[in-house]
Amino acid sequence: MHTEINIFDKPIERIRKTCELMGLGADFDRKLPELETHLERLVAEGEISEERLTVSGLTFVKQA
Image (tube, rainbow, N blue to C red):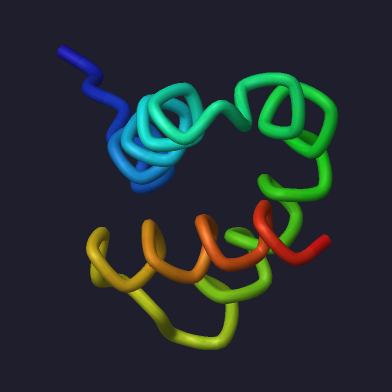
């Protein structure tokens, strides 16, 4: 049995929901590819906290 765990699933879903609540749903959709790259870079640098990835991702979407 093979189970794949994706560390990005929860942070991206939380970011999406928060952006929708803030009226930034279109920004989220437009920036999703760059957001994924941003989160991948953080994980490559050693970040594994879903909460920190979420906060960093929200900050990225809001300012990028």
